[in-house]
Image (cartoon, rainbow, N blue to C red):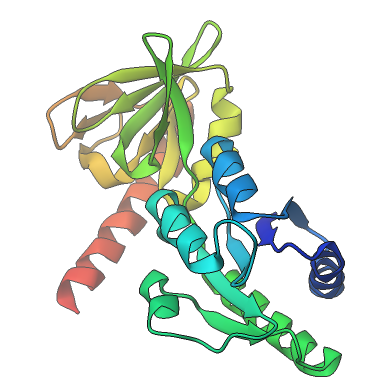
Length: 242
């Protein structure tokens, strides 16, 4: 499933771009915005965007202003600017767009552009934000800062590796696993998933995080966990050698 935002004050152009992407892939959730203000307001509650297509010239906040605000929350999302009249400027590239489209492109050329961007999407996985609750306040968290997520009575508990804080979430553990399995989270026990980034040592029955905390590895999960841990270690070794 890909999550694609389109922000343009021309609703017909939005429908046009949606149609071209749907020709390439049906497994896309679209988020449509007619202004930069709409996008900025809605993105506070969104966990991820794999791609944002953003009009440069809009009433109110223009594309460059909107992109700067967007990048504060989603620094790794693939960004494509589009415009009917404006050519790229130095300011346009401050937010690291992947492409700059002109609306005057023929449909054949735009279709090729869409196919090229989708090809990049397939190679680029955007880590989603997750939301946790602490003292009646909802906080957007990066999975990279979470050491593990455990089952709770009414959802799950997320444990911050750095601050040692914990956050509650109504989302079930199985839902978190489906969301984060491509980003290094693995079942060590039916009651929790672990971020391999923070695992220092793992044996048949126990793992230890780099900050010292230990967790039990269940017999049922030991084989798959230790295999994933070994693969992760090998990957880290290869990266260190480069």
